[in-house]
Picture 1 (tube, rainbow, N blue to C red):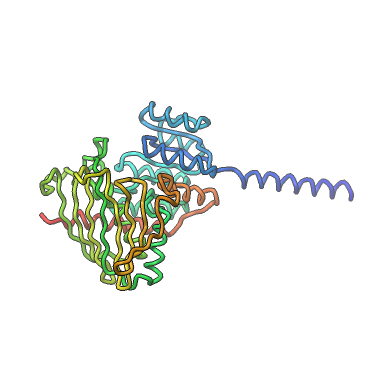
Picture 2: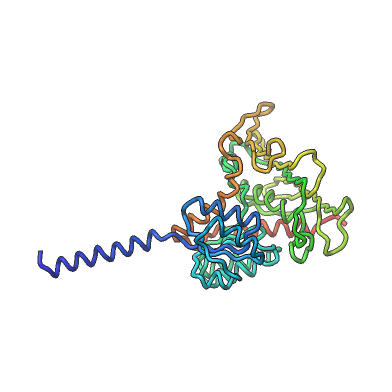
Length: 357
């Protein structure tokens, strides 16, 4: 082999080595808002090994420093703009709801993928603006609708979509939380977009539409309460809601959700689907926010499909962000599934717009 050929091969090997290093580089993530939920998601994605926690920003220096202790290599920044200037590939947003849409759009327009706490927007219009920004930027957009990621939830979806429950005609959705949010902005409609429906009901509506492959919401009616009285003042938020959604295809979903309900335990959470050939449900166990059992119903007989003993306690709540991070690491661009986020937001809009006075 002559020297020029040897140099060519060496050059190719060097180029391949550089390309391999680039391909293996972990995405750098920035975290905007690292309160309890933001820090939990940061821990979940850091433990996955898929990414590098590169930068952290929070209006509370105490929160930022606590998060930095979990990711000691991360830089502390003072704003979203500073996070983006740090050269991150993705940003995780866990700030008050009123900020979600605009902050997501700013990041996407800088060419950065986004994972946002729910709700992505306080309305369907805000949500669509973010989805369109992700489409234009061809960046991956994720929202923390974590209940899809219970180990048994896809089993229910597959039973429904595979026709094993027959024609699903009734859905019962419940999320009662014995506690209320501890931040004042949750109780200001202009900042939160709504009360327990926006905070808890969004998970239930998303589960139902996702499991049924996103039928159209043809009609909605609701009754909203604050402190035991019908919701009146424009800027108050509901702490109890009952809603009825009629879906294309004829199915009816009834939903109840609340904050601070005296239900005798920490939480009551369930999503039940009834069809002409059987039923299926997910429900929490012993008032837990984390332990769930997934069941299939055959007349009066009940079959357990999955439960807390399957190793679901706690860890499933971080699966949504890990899935998003895996997509970012794979170089994924815009996912058309993000368009469904506007369908969920439209259903919430209908619940708020069609409440009984």
